[in-house]
Amino acid sequence: MNKVLLMLLLALLARPAAALDAAAVRELGFGDNDAKIAAIAALVAEGDPRAAGLLQAFADGELSTSGERVLVVQGDAGFDALSGAKLEALPEAREDVVVNNRLRRELGIAVAALRLVSPQRETRLAAARELAGGADQAMLPLVQKALGKERDAQVRRLLELTAATLELKTGSRNSRIAAIRTLGESSNPATKPLLLGLLEKRKDGSYAEPDAELRAEAHKSLRALNGRLAWGDRLSLAFAGVSLGSILMLAALGLAITYGLMGVINMAHGELIMIGAYTTYVVQGWFRNGPHFDWYLAAAAPAAFVASALVGMALERAVIRWLYGRPLETLLATWGISLMLIQAVRTLFGAQNVQVENPSWMSGGIEVMTDVVLPWSRIVIVFFAAAVLAGTWLLLTRTRLGLYVRGVTQNRAMASCVGVPTARVDTLAFGLGCGIAGLAGCALSQIGNVGPDLGQGYIVDSFMVVVLGGVGQLAGTVYAALGLGFANKLLESWSGAVLAKIAVLAFIIVFIQKRPQGMFALKGRAVEA
Image 1 (spheres, rainbow, N blue to C red):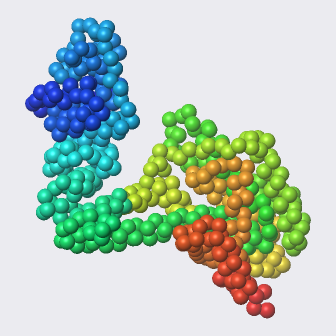
Image 2 (cartoon, one colour):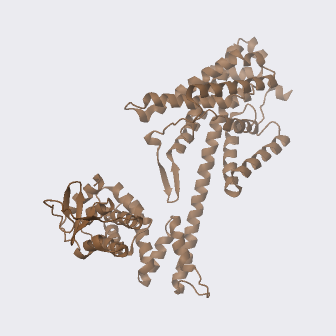
Image 3 (cartoon, rainbow, N blue to C red):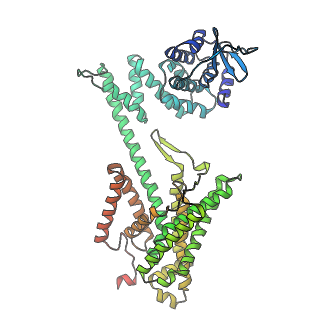
């Protein structure tokens, strides 16, 4: 018997206990399936403090019969199911009571109903959620009794929904009208079939519900429910668009520096994202057996930035420095380096995906509506992307390095004449872009698989974001990422993922044909000349 149930029983036993229904207990042991289900409902409706323990023992396969008696057998100890008295010795001739799937489902609902009186809010909430998925009509008195004592708003909403569902079937005319109105105030999609059932027509053309007033109330409630569900769908779509847009922005922000500001077509950008994800995996391993595992991301994010930045700076020093102004050679060289990085990761970590776990504070989500849950992992990534964007903007506009980067971008020869170390600026700027790619990998490790091919899925999207937003424009990168995120999710809801990708690509091709400079053109002397 688990701890939750034990606490429940202690709470219940604090009140005066009535005797268990002897006939119901006997049916549990000797009745057929229908009789056992009726007995379960009777015990729940009776509300005896010992019913929860008996039904839990039945669900756990601890119920046996011996002669005319029904017993609870736990290990070497035996108890009389009716009185709860402990037996001096277990009878040798006894038979186990079989629990099939049908009975197990009814027992789960019954035990959930009895848990509604638990003093713990989480226990009551879990019980109310389980009952909302289906409850027996005989449990209505207990649900109403729990509803009368419940003070928590979320638990009350679930109990009201359960009570309305039960009242709708067998209640009086007035109670059924009240139940229909309650269902109309819900945001649970499961209530929609209940209302539609009242409006169904039989083969002879008559309505399943003969009362016209009830049907009119069902129409009103159905319209209100559909409107609420439509807003839930819009909210889900908007959040999915922001989430995808923030991921695209993280993936493309580093490329906006290496390609947008420096003019380097870095085909290894996706592999730098991958390096950040694998760095997160390694840091997670260091924290796994320690007491501070939930905070490993605080160390993984800077480590991912440094690891990808160092690889990028080495790449710039060894290869790219000699290829500035030669885009085709740069493209081919970085593509070859990307293959080398993929193979190196496969050699070190294997070809299979590795598991990166979310910290406990990133698990679960916020339930804004019954059918709309915003995952904490996605919410954190949205804010993380905003923080990275703000940091990048401050670095490029409020620091000496940012001033140097912008100066070298606009006029390298003039910047060199006034003392700007252009070679060092190139290395640092390229390292910055690659480090941001590592931060993107750290974020992506929290929402998907981490494998050698992780970066391949983002390199094309990253280039599309940078080109669409405008080469060298961080604001354009943000708008393009969010726009593509919303467009992808909106089109996916209409035509599916594949057609959505094709439509977005076709739009970008047409857009670039009409406006080659992207959404935002880079202004400067070179452009004005």
